[in-house]
Length: 283
Image 1 (cartoon, rainbow, N blue to C red):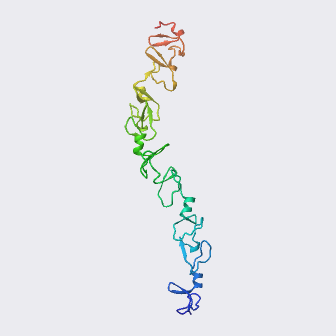
Image 2: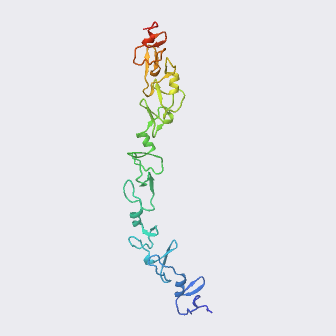
């Protein structure tokens, strides 16, 4: 049975010997080290009670073993970074792991603020408007091949204005008659349908969808009465004040095509020479 000055574990007398007090219990140095001391992450040896135990995230080192794993300089009372279970001084971490500024190509040191845009990184002081050279920070920006611009400088240097709404066009747009529209502003002058992905015709420098143009302005075929648009290279025939689709310009009696052929007219009809020879022609 142990007395007041016996080791709690082995019961050996501690009179005149070194001992360790833990949780109100006395332990000889040997028992304390065996039961409570930690093993060093670097040398794997026991960190004895008479040695300083440095702890970081439940890992332990001798004071002399607490070093940068790359340059082996001591990290005691110095800033460091843990990377993939390794301890690195800030200099080694910067050279090995830190991002480099897209502008100045220098390392962006740990703890310093960096800006990220399109997969690249900048020092905050290097991420500036290409025109006014002021830091952009988290403000809205517009990017061009020549660099990044704050919105006021971009508007001043590059922006075009929509011919319809008069607001700035920052990207894309539709050009018609040397004027620019937002895609959503380029509308049919008749029904106001969006035309950016539609075939359209123009009249008096105004755009119209095909339906509106055909209804309002297109000539009608004298044979089928449908609009003649001339789109996609479609051919048509004009004679006096009448027009025909090429495929509709046929003899009114035998229906043979009269395209490129001589023909005769009688009243409002057209005939091939054979069929028209029996009628009084107009020409």
